[in-house]
Image (cartoon, rainbow, N blue to C red; front, top):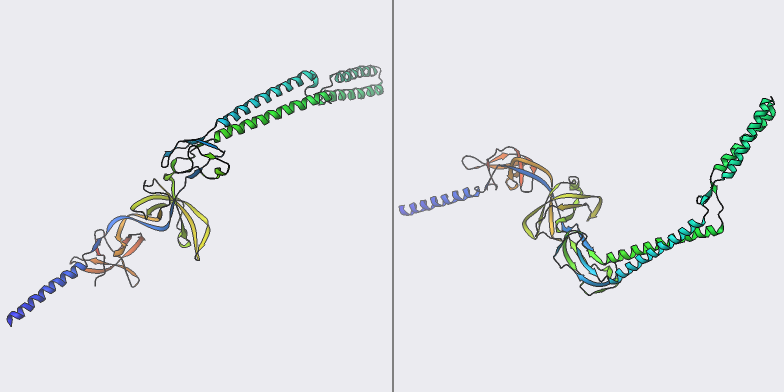
Length: 400
């Protein structure tokens, strides 16, 4: 009987030890108060899109002579992608240049004929009456001399009459000195019109030459941006009609200019401003985080399922080469930041009776309830304003 009691006592002690170990293990998952940065974020989901995404096409029909790039090639702005057979276009340019030269020769001939025919004193289409000026001045001089004789004879009445007439002569001389329109002979007018017609033909020939030259330039496609060729819809020897020009020949994407567009509800949009820091994560690349910046916030609202939303665009900075156009992404927009503050994991904070508490591990290793003041709340950690000191240890779980 004594042996049985001793055995039962031993088993009981062993179970007590195991239970004690189990209770201790329940509180061994702990966290320490450390100093770090805390960021408050607003998250928005969407898909990545290359801001520099260009489709390039020929603008004139013709036969594709050469394609100089392949899918996946990296090109720079101005690089030649493809050319049409331009021999016919070059002939049109040469013909148009010749027509310009001929039109200019015809204009020079018409201009020279007009210059040789027009009387040198016409001054274009205007004339000055030089003889009339001298005749009026001669009459005025004669009247003034006669008026002086009447003044010497004390005949003021006749002198005043002559002086008034002299003034009229001077005014007539001034009028004759002013250039006035000249009624040119009809033959001269015809020659002027011929010169104007020749000038018009010159301008028309120049425009035709410019058009032919532009068409020749359009026979070559160049890259409008720096990027990667992602699509090629033509090959050497293809004959392109006017209808074919509606289909892009190439697509070029600059992977360094990725953006993400998403919708933010009205409760959070007030905290979003241009230039805010953003951290973008991707569903296809776990663990990859790309920095970005808020570059657009729409002023126009969108209603979705009764919720007011605003479009927001985030531009990525130097994305990882694995990040590609179209990927699903989540942008975490940093709205507030606290640096070098006391922090704890969010999971170590509990709510009781409207208060924030932690289970502080005392010197005996037991969890003790302690109230704390919370500051900025981040995604994984929170700021501890008061109630704990750096290095304090708390339980991550509420004790049973």
